Image 1 (tube, rainbow, N blue to C red):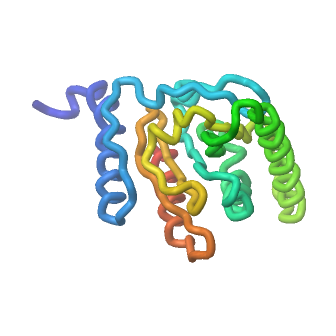
Image 2 (cartoon, rainbow, N blue to C red; image 1 turned 120 degrees about the horizontal axis):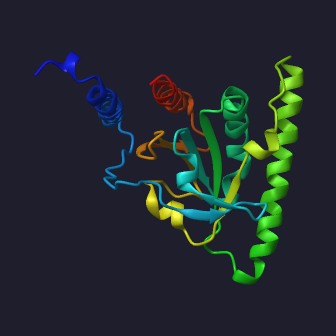
Length: 210
């Protein structure tokens, strides 16, 4: 069978082959790689800090990056979040979502927790805008809308993807445009995370170029 006679098949298979090759590379570097086989991956529904419903399938067609962490590591994760927003916030083919572990929050305190998360979203937008001005970079339109922060009260996202203790580490999860889990990276407070962040960036760039 000549591959050139089946271009449609190649267009369907090539992205899967690319993701498989990337996954193999991640395994060799010791990164947690998902083995998700669902026909419709990323089937989760949560509520963001503004009270809007967010579904995993809403991000199909985009490279999606999830930052999984808990409040004790907030000061550590904010510079990482800012860097990702400055680098990728202008892209329409990518989504960045902060997922905060609030599974142990008392149900009566959930509304207060949501207000805190929304204040965090607005503060992040303000910080990034000031940085863009300092670095003479163009503004990111509708920036605050591109910074969904999710309080995962039921643990739907944390239970779906490989991650490390959110109180001690930040986990960066990368999903392909088809919603498949490509890999999870551990960032540790006080450690040199430069190499790990480089691998995350390599994975994002790889998927964006497909």
